[in-house]
Length: 351
Ligand code: AHR
Image (cartoon, rainbow, N blue to C red):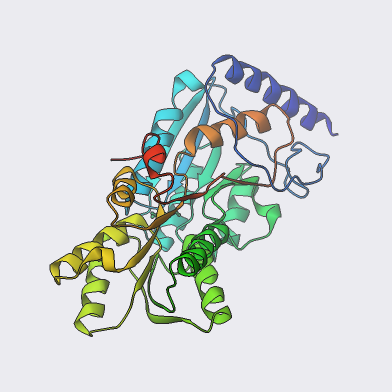
C-alpha cells in the first residue's frame, strides 16, 4: 500500500467510526456477489479503488443522488427514503438531481454532481447503456459511484457496488405465479396484454425478458399486445384505451408497475369491462395496489422495494470503514396475492 493510500484508508476508517456513532442505517437484506479484495484503497471490488470519504473535511459525506424522476408512486417513496436518511444526523449531506426520466439529462446531472462537490454519487439510471464515459469521469475525479435501483451494462470496474431489485427475478416470480394460477384454476390459455416500463431500463428489460421467455416456452401463452406505458398511470391508461378500441381479445394483463396498472384498470372500467374478469399482474407493491389485491381487482404483485436510502447509507458506512462489501446486493422480494395481502398491507409503502 502506498503512503498516500494509508492516509486515506485511516481517514476513511475514522470517518466511518464517527458515522457509526451517529447511528442510523439498516442491514442490507441480501448479498449475492462478494468480489475479491482489490488490495488498494478499496476492498469492495477488484479494479475499483475508491472508497467514500469526507473529502472537504466538514464532518459529513455529501451524497449526490442522480434520481430517475417522479414517474411513479414507487419513485416518490424511493426519493423520500433518501431525503429522510441522508441528513446530518446520520453523518451525511444530500445533493438531489431529478432527471425527469430523460437519460441524456441524467448524464449531465452526474457531471454536475461532481462539480457541485458530491463526495460519493448514487446513480439510479433511467436506462442502462452509454454510461462508460460518465463513470470514467467520476472515477478520474476520485468520486466513488454506487448504482442503485436499476443496473448498468458496464464493466464492474466502473462502480463500487449495486444495490436494488433483481428485475428478471421479479418477472420470473410473476410468471411462476401465473403458471400455477392457470393450473389451479383450469385456465386453458393466457392471451396477454403486456404494458412495459421505460424501454432500455433494466426494470423493463428484466421483467419483459421473464415474460418473453415464458411465452416462448408455453404454446398456450401468447402476446396480444406489447407496448410501453413508460411506468406512468396516464400512459398506461392511454395504451389500454387504444388496445380496447381495437377490440383485442385478452384475459391477462402483465403490467410492469402499479401506476400503469391503475391506468389500465381505469381504462377497463371506463369501457364498461368487469376488472375481475381479467388476470391482472402488477409490480411494486404500493399500499393502494395491495388494497386492490384485497379487493380482488389485482391478482398478484411482484414486489420491488423502494426504501433503499438507509440500506445504501449502511453500505457507504461499511465501505468507508474499510469493510468488504458485495459487488451486487439484491433486495429481498416476493409476491403479494390474496394469500398474504392483508398482512403485507400493514407494511406497504406509499399511499
Ligand atoms: O426501477 C423501479 C421501477 O421504476 C418501478 O417498478 C417503477 O414503478 C419505477 O418507476
